[in-house]
Image (tube, rainbow, N blue to C red):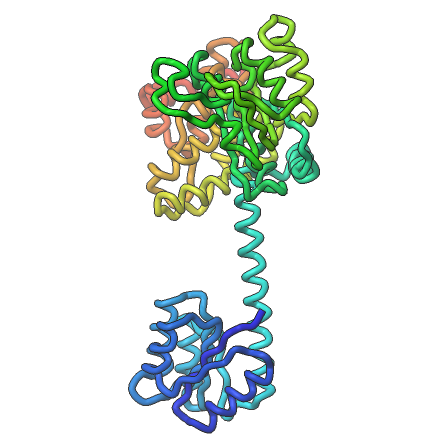
Length: 450
């Protein structure tokens, strides 16, 4: 990669020396002899690096630095200065300059600092490519637990295979995200990724959506439409919640998987396709087979490569990572600046049973980021049921069943702990009077004494 450098100095001899040095070192080097000339050149094309003198007539190096950073904050600016202006150069660092060189500038010094800069630019470019690649492949799939590490490995190992994949897991675990990751990790990533939610369509429309239809094939067929299989040619087709596919269509789907061809509704013309098929289900398909609701032969065709996504309750070590990921996401989307989540709220998350899985966590964090007036999320930013749970099972020490008196004591003491012993605030939260709390505390003290 050849990096571009703009040299800016109104001293012609210095400018020419720097140009010669940088061109000999392999840089794409251009020259400007004033700040105004530099900005004109910068507006015509972008430069990776600008090497500029500090003291120049009219527009000085500081003004040029500000203008360049305003136009492109990624451009690296290096200042050249005499000893008497070092203090000004240091101030320039605070404005975004990368470094400064003391005049007279030696060729080897210039080459040395630019080699550091170009190495930094290479790493920045590689990291950006990697970040974009990973965000596209594994968008929102976050986890460091052993089970998720296994899922990531499986995604990459099976991505290029043509075999069908069956992704199972409860609602909200991220099955569609895994399907997308398989597609974008595969050699089909430049092809289409097409989705059909089998549970979202009326039974009489699923076939036409899947295979397409000819004009006049049925009452509302006013024109010929291609189905999802045609649209997914040379790409991936995701059949979401495949357990809900009508039984009479399952045999037709089986034929397409086996023969890679089909006919549109209302047509006898056979269409061949090259499609990688991925299916998801939040149901127990073996139970559906036993009940006569799903074909066993189709199940075996789909389940060539099984991937199971565990519920969030089985991988709670991923929760802190997920929370930070969603805070960053919703900060960007809502122009917020939430710095994180406090330990109390995180303990509450770790105790919760997450029936809605990752989707529930994402929704709760989004609401908290949008509505919070603090820079750190606390328990107060989340609904009460998250703290208590439907039967109180999320409060360590609160066992169901237990005597009412024991439960009341536990809630009073925990609420006081939350409000640092403030009886008035605790009473407000519990819907009782401060006097009641004082009486209860005296009662508990007497019980302990006896």
